[in-house]
Length: 89
Image (cartoon, rainbow, N blue to C red; front, side, top):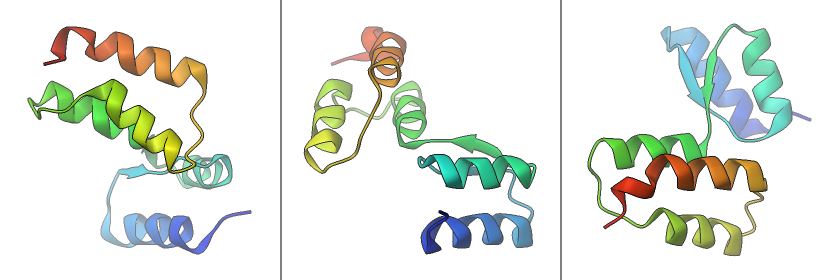
């Protein structure tokens, strides 16, 4: 089921001509794709931040997300760590 926040993000993107939205949950991602929007998730935002030179530890950021109850697949974690391993402080 699509929650209010995801619905608001998708509607705003459609109204404002925004091409890419950040949505992590499967139902929201499905609706966004059906609305012809490009997607990224929280980890994608963190990878981009690392590439742009922001200084933080990806392993620590992932651990904090998990402690807050955010579920991340092992595949997503592995990809994030692989893509940012040369950028760690």
